[in-house]
Length: 527
Picture (cartoon, rainbow, N blue to C red):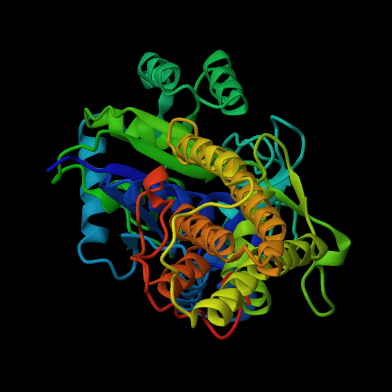
């Protein structure tokens, strides 16, 4: 059996629900690639996790008077439910607090790396809040990034992605009480990345990184790779093994790299042929630097690719009364617009290379496009078959005015979709554009050939045009499934075709003559 291609998506932090930025970032796009590859018959393992031990979970608990485990569990369940509602289906989601063997596996990895000299103790200055009597690590500290001079916390900077885990944060303040932090000496374990300089440089060169990601990595090499703190004094998270760091917890940045490794279990399974990582640029350090370093430390070197998205910026009309600024919850939008409209829109406007503005008006336009063009054409097609053929597929060869040209275009579209869905040239925005063009073209074809019904000699040509449209509908039930699986599966069921067929020219086929169609009572795509 061939070794699967491994697709990962950054584990979402369990301190809040999913919002539109999550779906527009790693998760829907990664699901599209997973579905497209499976349809092509390629074995895939699609994994993620939930970041339950992060400082943001503990901070949310302190702010709301709850226990961290209550916060983590509540949002873990909400995150997983929202992913399913969005049609994002993982093979494996690692839940650190409940996954069998996860805690001991991470602690064993931590111990092994320390025994091999990969981790080293360093005493550095670290922010401390005298008012709260608490060390300020990760989300507990707010300040200014020393690298880009923009606001950030003690994790990786969301703007430049550089880490600030070892006391580099400028003008740190307590995120809980806003008191200016005192700087105290703290002895912690660090991962000195400079010892991996040559290996990481070779790894990044082979990975053909996106330019902004390549610039980050080259800047890190030029400035000297940092020592990354991998533990901190605290009460939330996995305890550091050993007595000399009693009271310390394994840092969330280490777990962010460990969760994907546990999800695949490279220590037990043969390495995949390739891995493709989906992440936002703000998480690029963990996925592009820390994860490879942990793998290289264990003698694992994989051909890997990175699909990195920029942030989604929300326009004022995206914020409804009572909502928190700059937040639109995935559950609310999925309930209002459905997964087809939402997935189509976030893929069409995917923030690659630059930040992209999101507005509810744009999402509404995506729904209207599905209703007016996609569903409008299908409703008319099913109605015509019901009226002219008693709801059964006519026994005719595909044809009609303009069919040879349209079929030629469709054959090229199948080739172009294969390129857009490929991990080497993955471009979901291109896939959406190709699908839209297909529907517009067949809708024009349908309107042109509708006049055949008015001609005394046009019955045969009208039936041929109907079968031609059914061929396109059959193709769309396969071609559109990675983008809009809910609607594509409804269309396949209406046509009596199997789901998950290959995205090839062979999908351009109508159901067998005489097949009774079963169109849904409502829209095929969206609702």
